[in-house]
Image 1 (cartoon, rainbow, N blue to C red):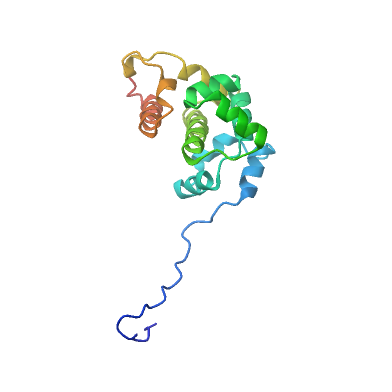
Image 2 (cartoon, rainbow, N blue to C red; image 1 turned 30 degrees about the horizontal axis):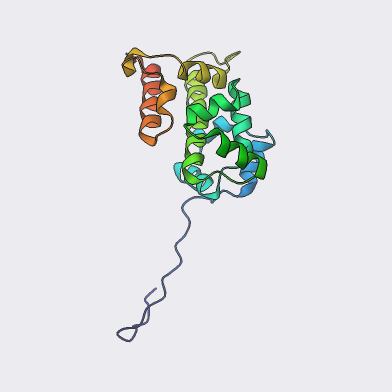
Amino acid sequence: MPTKPTRPGTRRPRPKAGKTHPKPSGRLWDQFLQRKRPLGSLYAMAPMGRVDLVKQGVPPEALGLLAADMGITREQLYATLGVPRATMERKVRERRPLNQDEGERVVGIARLVGQVEHMVRTSGDPKGFDAPRWVAAWLERPLPALGGTRPGKLMDTAEGREIVSSLVAQMQSGAYA
């Protein structure tokens, strides 16, 4: 549809862009918090959906759920995420959402759990396999592929999470060193 010409120096209103993905609502976090949907399902979510969830603010209760799923203490999770315990405990107490960086770290670990669940489901027998607990143990093991570094030490940066995710993908393909 052609637009009307405008006088020089005036602004033409921008057309509203159509959404290419549904914007997640706070209700999606409610599904995770009420255990209607596992946190690992974030792996299957479209990347833009995960971005929107992080920008909405990850609720601090997600920390407790993720720690419980992984069979570790919240303090252990805080250490893996590289976030200060006092700050996280205050946010939990005050029910303040995590900031974007903290939220990305939480979503990153949940996504890794989902990636492992997906890998086992498509390549093996998922019966009896507990992906969150496996991930928790695996993150603490020094790996030759990382020069003896524990994968958990890399989970506090976006680049580190990408390295760890790539390592899991290599395990699935058999290219793991």
